[in-house]
Amino acid sequence: MTSKETFRAPKGTRDILPPQSLRQRALTDLFAEMAGRYGFGEVVSPMFEDLGVFQRIGEGTDVVKKEMFELVSRSGDTQLALRPELTASVCRAFAQHRPLTPWKVFYQGPQFRYERPQAGRYRQFTQVGAEALGSDDPLLDVEIIALASRFFQALGLTQVRLLLNSLGDPEGRPAYLVALTEYFEANAESLSIQSQTTLQTNPLRVLDSKRPEDAAVIDGAPLITDFLSDSAAGHFASVCAGLDQLGIDYEIAPRLVRGLDYYLRTTFEFAADALDAAQNAVGGGGRYDGLVEQLGGPATPGIGFALGVDRILMACDAEGVFPGPPAAADVFLVDLTDGTQSLALIDELARGGVRVDRAYDNRSVKAQFKAADRSEAPLAVIIGEDEVAAGTAQIKDLVTGDQRSVTRSELLVEIRKLCS
Ligand code: AMP
Image 1 (cartoon, helix red, strand yellow):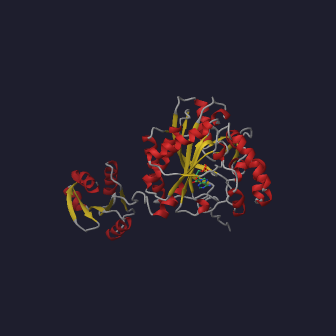
Image 2 (image 1 turned 45 degrees about the vertical axis):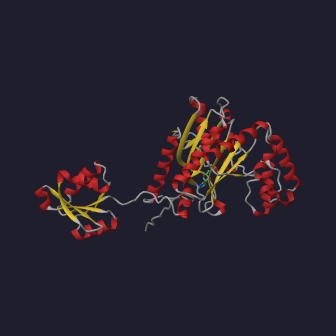
Image 3 (image 1 turned 60 degrees about the vertical axis):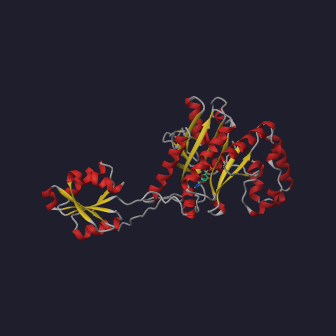
């Protein structure tokens, strides 16, 4: 006896089936459309890169240390990794191709992180994002943040908060790191074991801990905003003024640090209040002047963000917005001949821009009408031997039950009128 193994999607991954997949596509299409309007062009980069691309930029971070899917090529001599995010790939592409600046690009696609799966946290998830390289104008920071904010608004989300911080620059940051490290070391015994370990490698990341036992110590920690150099403080003030000018609300969040440690100056995150606090980050980003250089390119300032599509859709569910496009066809064909009429009609109507469906296997009229009802299409086109002989077709409104005859040559025009 042979036992047949049944397979499921790997842990932490999901199949996204219709109609949910249509909704996801509508969301990424809307983002692409909006990014285009703000002057960003799409960059499509590989799903895997040389491991070094990610290692070089995030050695001290969980994403790179613990969460990467590493691959070894068949020859065994190339170490690769599935991308855990796209900023590194975009900077690698910039260093490789040296496009004219400012280089404004957007992206969409899956990212891979070996995380402990839970609701809103997957091992394969989709992000949309945008990056702008080659300028450190604070008004560019404003424009980038505006693109993300306006996107959330366009989806109909009203409970997404923008949290804003500055992580300072190489002038002011060392003094802050010294003060922060001294403070945490003095209070180390009150920190969780995990944060005590993080403290050894990356004191900034301790601020990111969501563990309740760390909360009191974090609350008393020195604030980066008290350590900004004049130039970083000026940059931050311009960003705030630009957001004020556009009427985009934000909260200053002086303890906001981001998971990847290449950020400096402007950093931001979007929190969806309709989601559970543990998984409420729907996106984030910031300025990363210096990253292109680390990847072998010329010194180039940059700023960008990534938004988590899976979580944004969860937030849309929670707020009851962005239902996505209707899944049903416009027209269901009911074929009373041997089915060959439908074959030609599908071809004609689909090519003419109509979304059309039918039944198969020569089903009875009753079964075909049942299928039409189930499909939720608003219209049926009925064709039998009489219609074939007369060169006509019947159009039936499946909501009111009204039915009328049109000539075959007018059918497409009539249907398009009814669908518009
Ligand atoms: P990050 O690059 O970590 O700042 O991620 C940007 C956004 O991607 C987050 O705010 C989340 O919305 C989303 N995200 C990150 N990791 C995951 C994950 N494992 N599963 C689902 N969404 C994620």
